[in-house]
Image (cartoon, rainbow, N blue to C red):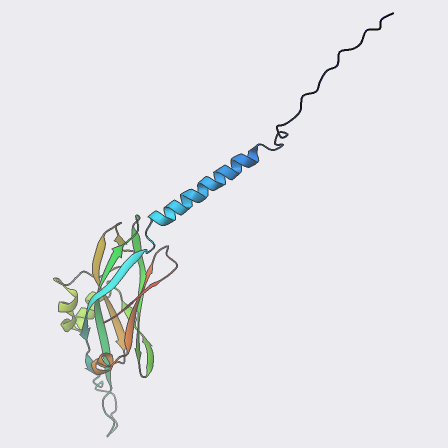
Length: 203
């Protein structure tokens, strides 16, 4: 008696790799690569410098003030009357916006270096200028038109634009001769939302 034989089924060879157990991984890698390329493109296309700042010129006002005694005060013979020397520096500053966004002036400071060491200046705000001009009318031509207008806190500079204004600094207890003999002077400008200050020389 002939026995029936079961057909032999040949198994196909599995050449393709097994399916990825997590199909999101390739998509995440592609998205990360795209983000890196975008970041590199933005970095290469945007300017590296936030602003370009220069001190175009400076005007100096150095008053010598003699303090008169009150009528009721006593005066010691041989003791000279008290006096004070100060130097006011009116700096004409140019701020050019190198970003594609507006920049805002935060604060400024100035330092002078001489043989005696360094001296920090006091910034005279635009609000205090009228009162200072009442005390020293000689200062008015240096800060009034046709001079550039005073730079104020949070003044904005439009993208690609340049703003020119004046900043007044007071170096106390300093003479005009000492200012002329200085080794160097530096203006430091702080911009809002910019951690790194910008330092430029004062002529």
